[in-house]
Length: 140
Image (spheres, helix red, strand yellow):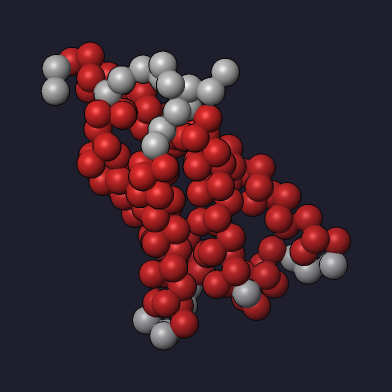
């Protein structure tokens, strides 16, 4: 890749990270409203439903990511690859939690977030032609 495609690839990546983080805060925060309304603290939720937190976190980042990518004109194949890169870490960590390999939700969330960043790049590489161009196909 020459400098321009690398810059475009990096821009797409950063753009998606921003959307992912916004989704995590907005959707994740909204998902906690019923928990708070029921009188449960975040610590109680972490203790009683850690798998729900892991999967909810993955979902709250995946939904806006797929929406944004579709809006920006990316193919469904690239969308599926990115969705898998976002959801598979949450599912794998839920398995580790369920089998008792790791039970600390803080550690699992740290791993989930750490793994997602390189997983996103890995999901982008097979579709680099899409990520090294502008958004000419983007929905108005």
